[in-house]
Image (cartoon, rainbow, N blue to C red):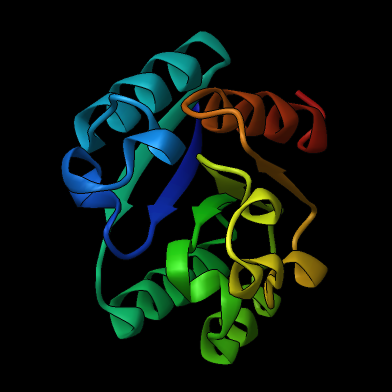
Length: 146
């Protein structure tokens, strides 16, 4: 039986088709979903992939994961840099959480250099495009001992 995995994506990731190609390449949100689905299946996970531009909805999903002890791969997007409410929800998780980013925030604008969630997750994978998600799924498998 596949291990359930929640993959959360924050604001504007559903509009990668309109975002800066120099940072995100030529991908769209469906490419993220396909990459996650394929990698998850290969490694024995069942992935529930969700995206929201709404901070409250992301927090509700994190609460759901905490209650059900579901491991989470999370791209908080812009909320990475300032949402203490999301950070607090991540702290409540009972299973591992890995932060991912398509681009490398440290190679971008200075305001992106701070992550309020990095200190409360198992690890952060950034700057590898879609491979950031694939690497996170592989890392999650290791964290769960599978």
